[in-house]
Length: 287
Ligand SMILES: CC(C)(COP(=O)(O)OP(=O)(O)OC[C@H]1O[C@@H](n2cnc3c(N)ncnc32)[C@H](O[C@H]2O[C@H](COP(=O)(O)OP(=O)(O)OP(=O)(O)O)[C@@H](O)[C@H]2O)[C@@H]1O)[C@@H](O)C(=O)NCCC(=O)NCCS
Ligand SMILES: Nc1ncnc2[nH]cnc12
Image (cartoon, rainbow, N blue to C red; front, side):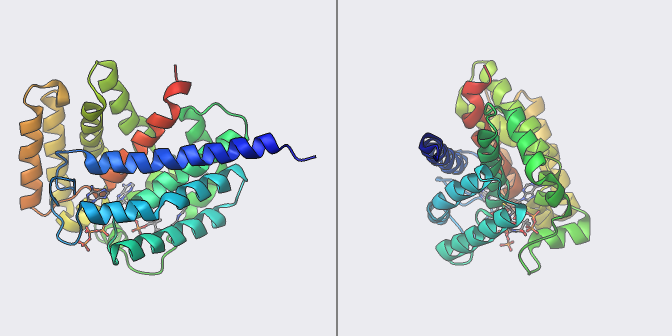
C-alpha cells in the first residue's frame, strides 16, 4: 500500500519551500538602499520596471517554486526542470508586460527548490551542504552543458560573447558558489556579530557585488562598469560594511553613483534572494 504520510509530508515541504522562495524575493525587493536596483523607495537605474512590476512577477511565480520542488523530490530529469523554468519565464513576462524581472531567480532559486525536494526525498537533513550536493548530484552534468533554453539573443548571451561575462549558467554548473560561499557566508557572519537581518542582507549584497560576474552589469556598463561595481562594493566592505556607523549614507552614495552610470547588479540581487532562501531553509538544521 502507498505510504500517504510521505505524500502529505512532501506536500507540506513543497509549500514551505515555495513560501520561503517568495519571501526571499520579497526581502530582496524591500531591502534599501540597494545600488542601482529597484526597491519600494525608487526604481534605481530602471525606467521600465518598479516595485509594482516586481510584485506582479513575484505573484506569478508562486506555483512554479512548489512545482519545481515537487519535481526535484520526484527525481525528475533536467529536461523537466527546464520545461518548468521556461513556463515560469513566460508567466513572468505575461505578468510584467514583457519585462525581465526575475529570469535569474527563476533559474537559480528554481534549481535550489528542486535540490531541496531531492535532498528531502533522499532523507537528508536540509543543510546548505546537502542542498549543494543534491543540486550537483541531480543535475550537475546537464547544467555543465546547458547552453540556453530560450531561442533568442539575451543580454546575458551578448555580454558573454562580447566581454566573456560568465553569468547564471556558469554559476549553477559550479554548484552556486556565490550563494553557498559568498552570500550565505556574509549573511551568517553579520548575524554572528549580533547585527540584524537587514544588516546581514546588505552585507551579503555587497559581498556578492564584489565577486559575481554579473551579465546585467556587463551588458549595461561593459568591463569599466563591472570594475566600478567591484571597486565601490569593496570600498563599502573595507569601511566595515554595516558594522560602520555611516553605512547607510555610504550605501546611498553608491546607489546614486550607480544610477548616474545606469548600472544595475541584477544578477547579484537574484543571488542575494537565493542566499536568503538557503539561510531561511537551513537555519534550524545547521545548529
Ligand atoms: C539559463 C538561462 C536563465 C540563461 O539566460 P541568459 O542567457 O540570459 O544568461 P544570464 O544573463 O547569465 O542569466 C540570466 C539572468 O540571471 C541573472 N544573472 C546575471 N549574472 C548572473 C550570475 N553571474 N549568476 C547568477 N545570475 C545571474 C540576470 O538576472 C537579473 O538581471 C535581470 C535584468 O536583466 P536584463 O534583461 O538584461 O534587463 P535590463 O538590464 O533592464 O535590460 P535592458 O532594459 O537594458 O535591455 C534582472 O531581472 C535579474 O533577474 C540575468 O538576466 C535561460 O536562458 C534559460 O535557459 N531559461 C529557461 C529556464 C531553464 O532552463 N531553467 C533550468 C532549470 S530551472
Ligand atoms: N530589485 C531589483 N532591481 C533590479 N533588478 C533586479 N533583479 C532582481 N532583483 C532586482
